[in-house]
Length: 137
Image (cartoon, rainbow, N blue to C red):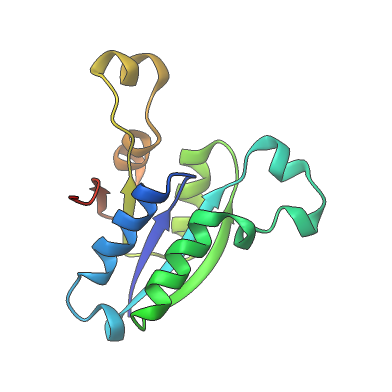
């Protein structure tokens, strides 16, 4: 079984694009399993346990439901801050074979000043990383 990590943020369009990427892979419904993760904000991570459940995140539910409908096995995992480190920790914990990241569009200066979670994961991951762009309208 080929295991893919989908770290989703709060953007539904990016989450849909990530789900569509996985669903479009050959044998997605029989040979691929997916771990969906979301990095909780500091406020979410400090909330009572019943409120910090990753299943409460809309984009996590959206991806889980979209992949479930296609017969793809889905697991959920909660990543910790900072996001890139949390994603890499989940990748190692679940021994994933691939990471499919969504990414914001930023100017080169914006990336240099603020960094990019996708860029950090690409540079530090031990497995292939695909950056999934938006789905065409």
